[in-house]
Image (cartoon, rainbow, N blue to C red):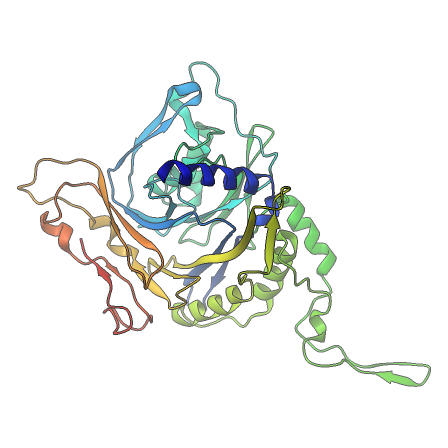
Length: 408
């Protein structure tokens, strides 16, 4: 059964890699009147990648494989972080935020994206592209750190043996000081773009997406006035006419244009709570119900239907990650401000190793994967409650609807 499952994953992976429109992730940032920063992101995919939420402490050891079976870059995390992983792995994050308010999104990109070459003698600087998000969250406090430190790496193409994927991706990074950059690898070169607009989708490349916005400078939230031709007066047919021409399909360029319009014209909210509400309203307009985006393989036997599998909303100012899933639209939260103290050992505990545990709840439709830096669940401070999964956002206690709380 396990072998059959792995074969199915491999088949789906090859199919999805050849059908790039099957990924429609969307990410954007809003700034509240009081300066709070909220980042919203949706994950659309056609295959069930068995997502987990993982919590990673400081000082967790990671080691990247190198090209050709060599040993690659090794590091210990400087910062604790929380994020989304797949297939039960405690690495290869697609989304996350660390204790300093640095957040990132890893999104599907161009199939011809070319990663860096690793020359002989450079293996200790080699980082698999599947672990780039982990390295950023664990080592960087701001976008300036990312810009400086990533130049020291050689990020190469790697096929993960667990996921059976070698994803072509690009990354958007935010920090708590309102910094935002986009990282894309092209022709073996790491290209970093400042992103003052604060949003991103998928292919084509970021500079093309920015240039394409020039086609939509006519969009406005105002109703066009009437005009007269040959004695006949023509009036707009209704509210929203100023947005005529706004693309409504699910392709990455169309979603990029819609993000530009929504983030420009939506009323700025005064604080984090109301900006979180606004972010949900915006992201809901990009939601993909099952059946609207379908891929059929050449043999007509494999059919995949893309859906919005989950969405996150990260409060970079107050260090809170909110999330919801396709089957559970109730918003729940993880308080990332506690991550600096996660998994500290009790003075009497001397035996340490890296380990993790799963928490599964049918109500959540998503695992909570606790990545620990200490052995034993009764390790002193490790039992403090640092995660609270909520059906609403106005309480720090589990609600009657969802009484799942994860404790360390």
